[in-house]
Image (tube, rainbow over all chains, first blue to last red):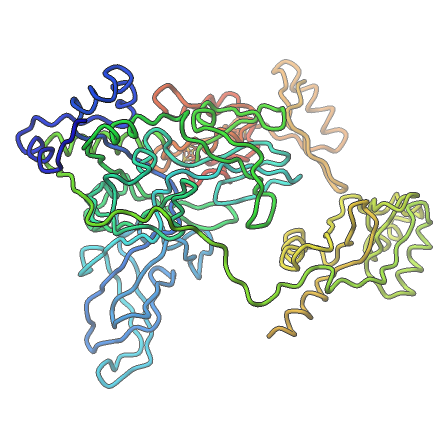
Length: 500
Length: 101
Ligand code: SF4
Ligand code: SF4
């Protein structure tokens, strides 16, 4: 059994004899020399990843103003930062949206602007105290004006991530990008063979205090990240680094259409090859890393996996899904991940970066549990109106008009002979028919593409469907497409009014 | 004429088609006479290389395979194939893609 100490490896870095390879190169080395030979030969294996890490942010300290202010609310370029701490500290989070520009600009863009040395408008308000009399402040700052700009990310560097697809009939927009209808594409994230945590999945060398590559500078692992879930290989890290030293090559703002903003963070971990077990784990390949393909069309926390897939398959550009070849695409940049692993390798070879032993190992037993919800969320069945008037598709348009008049309903679900929902007629469809002088059957004037709800859907899901499609009512149907009720935006507003 | 995309609803419709140069005028006149509007799509997708991080997110949403990875995981484009549908613009997380008119 070969054992190497961190001290020994650092001495080799100091005298220039260190042998550093990337995790990609290590695969071939282990195949060629065997685990023992590779352990003897290689001192450090470098990794890298560059992907969207929404759970990122930066602590800023602005220095004190004259007269001083204890900021209670802070905005940077109209993006709110959290300042519920001491007078002039604030945390800008990547996902916070601009109050002026919405999804086009967010905390991630403020962070990128700071990294690029651009000026940022600072606006703050306060309630005023004896020691901090000022109530409003407006100024312009850049990163050099700040005392500190410390990146502190609650959750980065996911070991791997679920691949995403969409089984609904419409394109959906997610933090995994645009997902085309009917399983039209699959997106994934993570660097596979170069993924930092996948190269040391039992945390033999990674833990609190580990020195890493973060945003183009040296940073540190604080410890486990939020939602750290080691038992199913979804480990995460909390990271810290000095934003003032980082580069816009590795810190980039992103906009996910109809989802929001996020920050692409470049990070890499050097893995000191202290024994054969570590050497073996750094020989991991894309084909060894398995993840699930989930249907993001299901608006629930629990999405049953459609299939398992390896990063090797995902990175081939096509995977099979329900017997069909589906194109895949990566949301993270493998090319940049490679650049990071190479740059970290250069630093170590040039004696600019020394490896560390963790002060504390990462927990390996924690789980990511769902939220405890005390309020029971109401279901569509609880608030839909059950006495719904329906009409047959072969009825005349006059009958439909009369039914709407008599019942003061705006929406009439239309059914076929065997009582299945086939469309919907609204007062508007009838007016259109009148205006055009088309006195046809219901089936000729109805809207065929009708949104529906299921009785056991949470009301929030129905509300989102109404909202997204700008309709004010939806038939509620059972598994046989029989209409069992109707839910309207009025029902939902009433429910919300009761809750307040 | 090779129809690559068609969208219709109750009020209007849109067809994207490949038309031979020699037949273009005849087809255009025929369509215009029927009240259709004909727009020539010859400004393919443009990528801002400064903004692009070469993630490849755009690859799976383009039906005509404009985007692909080269061997070293750089993004390659075959813009001749672009039918200007605009799908990739919403996909790109870095606002690197645009269509000019
Ligand atoms: S999605 Fe945008 S950033 Fe990613 S490769 Fe395509 S153009 Fe570049
Ligand atoms: S505009 Fe459409 S056809 Fe052109 S590259 Fe983008 S997705 Fe492909």
